[in-house]
Length: 252
Image (cartoon, rainbow, N blue to C red; front, side, top):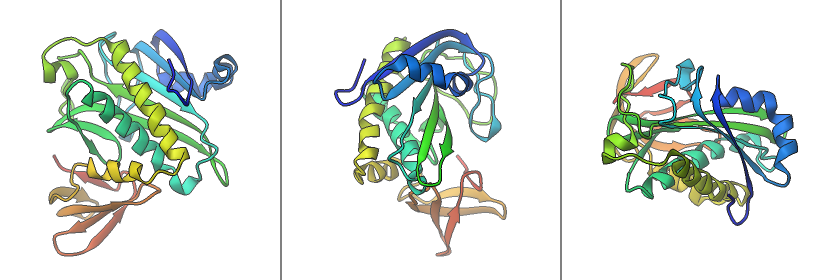
């Protein structure tokens, strides 16, 4: 399948330890097989050592969920704008969910939530040169048909839990890839609406919520997200706070 501007080369695996690891180790062979496709996508029915953000494991029942890694080489993207990739994939998942009448919110930097339930997680690995992004490995784990989960810090949800029927996992994957191809083109075109849409989709955008940093708990509103991904929060005492990833946590 392909967006009208970008061809997508797909590989599917029955089982793998991690789709991100597979893409990282097999990038040369994947590129050789992809021809003129600018987006490479690897999916799996099951992975035995999936990873999430903050070093957490990503646990998934075999065959029930989207386990996807996207490989791109965005040489046009300078390191200071690297967060555009996070915005693009998060919005792509949001776009895909809207096709199934599921409205999500994004939790900075790129988790996908419905109310207080985590629907999807995203893990991005970048190789940066001095003046561009050499390659990006973008992992997406989306809960589709799974309804039973092991206890974890973030309460999970799934498309089936929300809509109460089964979905075709391959079709859901296609929807995400089509949406990402369009969002990826926005990055190359330096389309400012990508950042605007991302911020307006964030949990905490224009709303006073509860956060925790190294100094403790506080209430704040998201004021901005910088091009490199730093989060700017305006706390209720008027102070502007700036955070890198892992330095602050939204308390849901």
